[in-house]
Image (cartoon, rainbow, N blue to C red; front, side, top):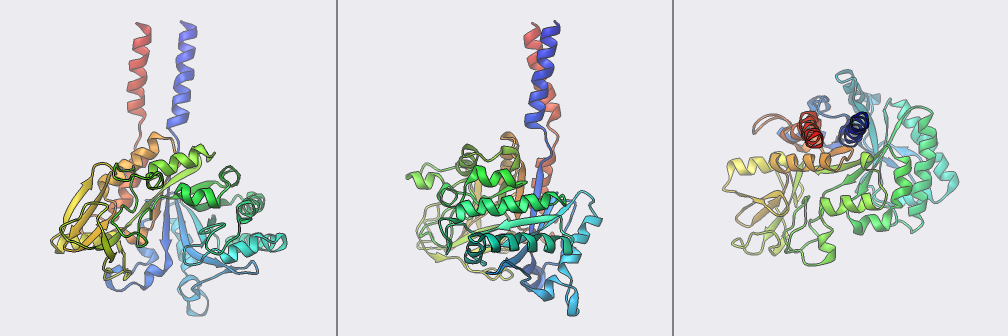
Length: 410
């Protein structure tokens, strides 16, 4: 009896440690959203800081001589009549004492060249590490999020792969002295990750391995395809196409050595759009003549914020379909087609995260959700992620344990 009881306690302890931990909801804020017109204009005061465990202010830049570059002094700084975005953003912690606020460096538009130049030279790399620390401390951030898109690509060099590890190693050593967080936004698919990353190497030094699980399809395609599908589809008949989904890419990262508890699954608060060649042919994989029309607020062809998608559906004749294979919705009206996430698909993704014992989810970006509640409650997507991620599964675990214990005792 003693042996059996001890076995059960050890088994339950292992189950709890593997499946019950503090999940992260890591939310990005694009500072340029302040400049969107009308109802699309997003202020830091619009942020609900109780919905996220971590938030990142995007973006600052890196110069070729290893300095951290403020990209919008008026928006970011309080000097010379500026709006003081950094200060206001970090003050969100006054409303949520558990919130961690980071500054994100890089981004797609910033490219790879300056990163590559800096990390390839040991002196420049050390200079940047010192400057990054001073910047984070000066503006009172909780840490740094490195969004290099991507090492060894877009103007980078093959040596970026090993030099990125060295950069993170040096940042880690210095950041540990001040108890600062180090995270990175990282390309998701095997096609990108296999070129850009030494996955065990970078994972060793990062607190958060934030996988950007979106943009699997976009303006570069001549057919409709999902932005952030959970699974592959039968119609995707090549090995490469089968990798363009969350499940395949997450398992690739895990198989390559990323610790599951550090891995965050990225989610998109926006959709990708196309213009159909034939409006009567509108299933995923349909031919397109180009990207879709821009939204009135984000004003970018081929992309719509979630609140712009809701606006279209409320005001136009849109047909919404849930893709049963890839577990995401899409919608079409005339020759316009959009792929996106909704409450149902994000509920499944959050449960997927928990089923694998991953570290949580990230959100790109808060300013693209229905933050004003124009079509229902405020932040419907972020709230869904927060709710599911933080649901206590102990009751179901207890039921499972009781059932198994009863079977054994019989």
